Length: 199
Image (cartoon, rainbow, N blue to C red; front, side, top):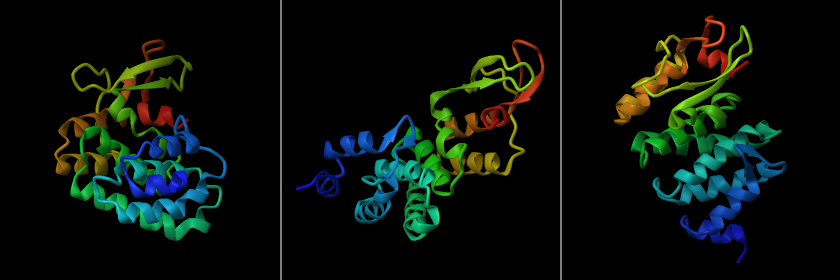
């Protein structure tokens, strides 16, 4: 039995750890990993929603870095539908909820949030002030964040609304901070946190 056969046969198999390690490095898919998309689509379709959470997260990274996304359009569409289904059914916890939203954005080809939305789970964002280039670690914890929250971007409003509907109020509270504005601790200029991340 091959490694992929072992993973496909059991969502809790240690083979999944090997598949992840061979496929992704620090949130970036290795060259050639897009060949896994048809396999991931088949496997995820056969798993229960709870069992396919982690494979869907992997699929988001793979799809985001696929050099020929149109060539895998059917698989990406199928994986996107499964990810949306999982989000509507309810993620296993708040962290996985964020990862699934990130996977959805990766499947959509969003270069920034398909890789960085998990900052919501990290509780902080490392950003450079666009005015003075000073590097700062900004807290996204509602209890102690210096950020003035905002939901003016359509994506932010959607993420906030869906997190509340899903019952993840802690995620919903962090979304406006990720898309809010903050005073630079170095130069005092006000800048947009999300904008600094997308520079």
